[in-house]
Image (tube, rainbow, N blue to C red):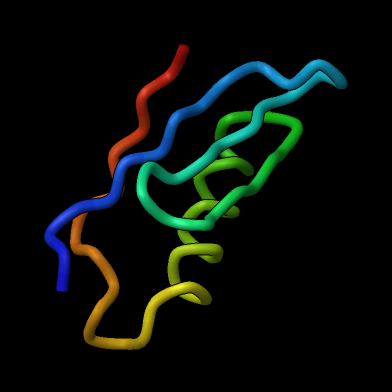
Length: 62
């Protein structure tokens, strides 16, 4: 299990935000930051098995 996963968050060309995980094939997007955070949590839970889910999700906005 990794302790944390980092997402790079950028403004989307279509409006809203996009997030990509560093070192993992996880990508999601949303119209606002609150929805993006929810989408990131859901994407992480789908990507990892139960005991492999990182305890900390860190966002870096550029």
